[in-house]
Every structure is written in C-alpha cells, then in structure tokens.
Image 1: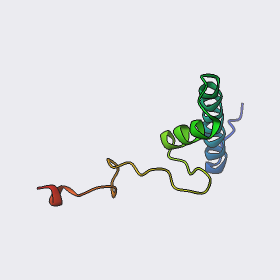
Image 2: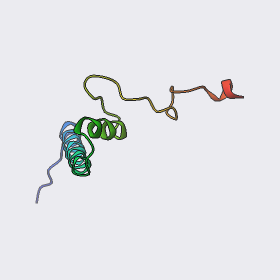
Image 3: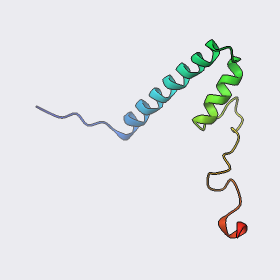
Length: 74
C-alpha cells in the first residue's frame, strides 16, 4: 500500500478553495437576511482579511503595525 503525498501548493489550493466556499455560503446567508450583497461581501471579507474591490479592508487596530506600540503607550 503506497501513501500519496501532497505538495504544499496542493494543500494551499485546498485551503483557499474551502475558505472561498465558506465565504460564499456566509454571503448567501446574509443576503437571505436582507443585507445588501455588497455590504455582506465587505463584512465577510473583513472577517477573513480579504481585499474587496481592490481596496484594502479596514485595518485591525489590534494587529501588529496597526496602532501605537507598547513603548508609545507607556
């Protein structure tokens, strides 16, 4: 019995495909609730840190590089 190994590119492609499916399902759910499609895309993209319409999503102030450093606060 031989084992098949997957390349890093195959694994990344699988992860990206799964992420895209989850994002599409969430957008579909939000539009069913009455949220406009463009707003739903923006909400989901910000959760997954994706670009929407070639614009950078709102930066998260809690991520590194987004706000003042501990030295600046203290």
